[in-house]
Length: 501
Image (cartoon, rainbow, N blue to C red; front, top):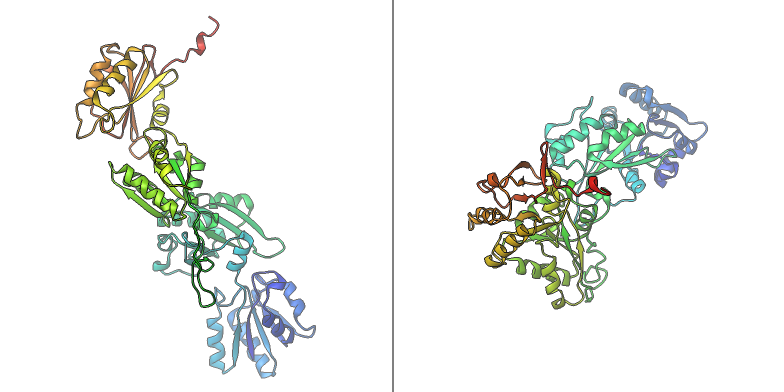
């Protein structure tokens, strides 16, 4: 009789009770010495015949099994982890079938379970991922094209990758091509549950660098996906007090309202979002916002519940966000730039008293004035005024009064929302009004698509500026009487060079 036994991931005490019993009773033990701890042989009888299959081929393994069967001996074929995963047992079982030799399989604890324990993680977090892909990179053993890393990566689920620690550079490229952002959490677990186990956390983009630095190029599993971070998940329904199962009846509970976070997401790209903004969005069950802004973060948080409304429906959007909080869901209301600069923070606070129990927290972000200033150089080094040319919420007369007052006071002026289809001439009018107080050669700047694909900047004079075509993705800077162009940059002197003179 042949017993194919899973030895477990490495630790001697993680072999199953059945596996240990079979091992202790075996006359012959064939173990995979390159992967199975030799310490497990301590369970074997002292008179058992021991063979290390690391130096044997399939035919030699079969010869030992066949001879043991002829001699009336019991054999344990000891495989690492669980034999069903990358254990090459099918060809052995076919050989045994052909020889009429009986066998059975004793399952074991797979190393992917040992890796999860080492990481202290749950692979299937509600709201993050409910699937685990177990796969490998193609090596000497090919992988079907339909099962390539790139194809599996498109699902965005948790991936546990075997037999690929020596190919982390290629693995990282395939994961990114498939759809994982480079900053997706990842981990390398070397010899899970062995005495010399090592756990290293990194990202998809830094897999190769991390493996090289730690000297890990074999005997390791790689875990990839947002579950590695173990944050932002939802409570399970299994233990939800309101959930009825075959063993208990659900009970009505009073939900504690969630927190409404008003989050400034900066110009749009992840690299310009603050760590606090990303952490809050990751923790919330719901992400709400103007459709265009929500689309910028969908790829970062694909498992979230999203709530969107179009432009001009801001109050409806805010009320829906509060309603989510009243249902016990932490909700992030995202705003471009900073939530307190032409964002939703003010309206949220105005409405908050109508939703008792909902806590409101404001999370700052990089507003376009600051992000665009960095693109142009240093235009805002002295006093400046920020003015929106949109008259949707502000009377046009008030806008013109503010533009002229700022121009007359010699503020650097930063214009938001300079033009749209409904007000194509407002920008030219604003420039004409400013020209009443500023010279034609006043240094000005344009920043377009700040922090996004297609970002551009231009430094020009006020006279040139008034004829430029601008849109809602353009932020305009009009210098004061001291602003000048230095190389390609727009600079407003702060006066440091003249202190003490």
